[in-house]
Structure formats: C-alpha cells, structure tokens
Image (cartoon, rainbow, N blue to C red; front, top):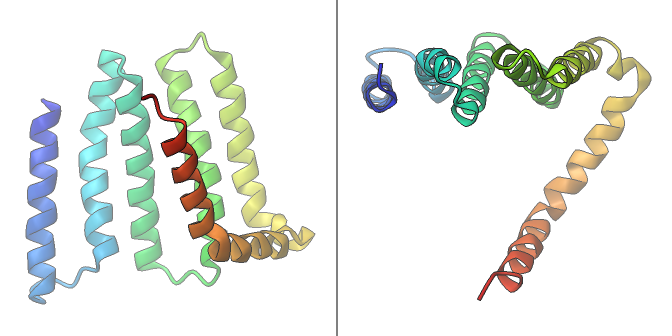
Amino acid sequence: MNNKIILGISFLIFGILSMLSSRNIILLTFEDVAGIVFIFYSVPTVYSALNNGERGKLIVSTILFLVGVVFLVKSYFEILDTRGIVFFSILFISGSVLIILFIENIKEKVFLYAGIFFLMLSYLSITQFKRWGLFISANRVGNLLEVFWPVILIMMGMIIFVNRKK
C-alpha cells in the first residue's frame, strides 16, 4: 500500500474520530484518538519500510507505534507517576527502535546490544530506580529544565541563526 494512501486514511480517521468525540457521539479523549491514528498509520508503514529498506521511515513509524501504545495505556489506566512513565517510555522506545533496526539489518550487532541495553534500563527504571533514589534526582533535573527550557531553546536558536551559512 502506498504511504500517501495510508497517511490520507490516517488523517481521515483522525478527523472523523475527533469530530465524533467533540460532539459526544463517541467517548474518546485526544490521547485515544492520537493513539489509534498513530497505531493505524505505523503498522503498514513499518511493514513497507522493512520490505523496502527505508530506515528513516522505519524509525519514525516504529516510534509512532510505540507512542500510540503509550497514549492508549495512559488513557485507559491510572498512572500516578507520569514522569516515571515518560522516562520508561523513552528508554523502551529507544531500545525497541534499535531492535527493529537490527531486524532490518542483522549484520549490525551493535543495534542488538544497544537495544537490549535500553530495554533492560527501561525495566530497571520501573522496578529499581525509585528504590535507588534516582527518580528524586530526575525530578529535580526535570523541574530545573522546566524553568530554564525556554532560555535553552532561545540560546540554541540564536546559535543556529548566527552560525548559518550566508
């Protein structure tokens, strides 16, 4: 199936589900709709990217699939520590993408080893990091980044603007 057709159908599904949920015909949140659309778009795209050797499309569609799953899980289950799920998700998605890249190119063993490492870190982030006190440190860093994030973005933009080719 052509990627443009999949993208078009995904936009149609997103629009229809958003319209139905805004009129309270179906009870879906934005996270539900986005999760459903991300999963719908990514499954055939991953399949076609694996067959055609398109790594960029493979990475993006794998990430979108897993983000869609995270959206649906967050929507249907009460998660008390949302920063913990974000940290876990980043580690798990990184590991999964690396495993998919290994499946796409079995000769590259570094993808397998790095993927397993990130998957193990994601497991530890759920089971052990809180006990070790790493979440408290991560929350402090997260709170600092929330305050300084606009300043960091402005500085990065200015550096890119100053260093552009004329």
